[in-house]
Image (cartoon, rainbow, N blue to C red; front, side):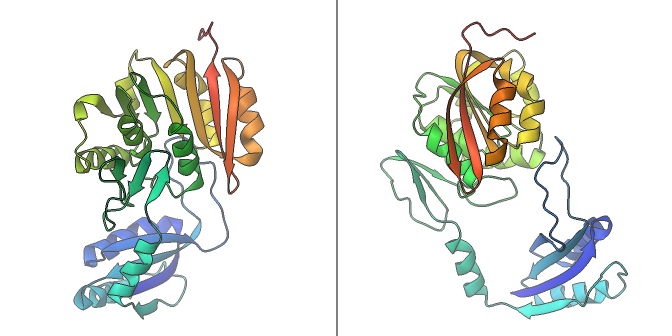
Length: 294
């Protein structure tokens, strides 16, 4: 495995990414090069740092050499290109050590390189991929902890912003009657469908697509693991799909944003409980019995 690292700017990143993939890179990742955190992007936006480091990996030496040759003519590289050779087995082992099986009540979530820890029970095989959600990030972890404690039998569930599908598929496995997994990102929709098929789950009990799939639908439970700003903007959209006395699970919220989210939803929902892990929070709300959306 050959690794290449370079420093560039946001305006040039897509062009350099395309160049590297066209030369044969098998993976490309971006890193912040100037301590510029991005916590609250607008809905539908995919922001990137102004100054960033691109890291690419190549399996074939010829592809690696071609990329180096092509980059000689690229003027938007702001540093010396760093080259390194990585032991394939060591790189793979380190990557796999980051993602191990996790248990949430009766549910196990495990990657494909591990044996099913509960072959006779409830388990979901899911690998890291293009879409967000493996259970290891605190926001997803908190949602799964809360979800594992809910009574889901004979209930319909919406996962708004489904990412990899981890919450939607977990809800299905934990007994939900029907789950609607929606996202505005096409990669998330593809990942959710692929993960459902990999686990041989019935697509008849799963509706996976864009939020347009929710036309007129109301459910007893809605999950939204996004970020605070979109949760504020989407309040009325979420509430109109929630039945009276329904459960609303919100996550992707920094601890210091919790009170503001609770207050913003208080017109339509009563606060039930919150969970916190590593600076992130999840909030469980119940819609009012006389719920009316103006």
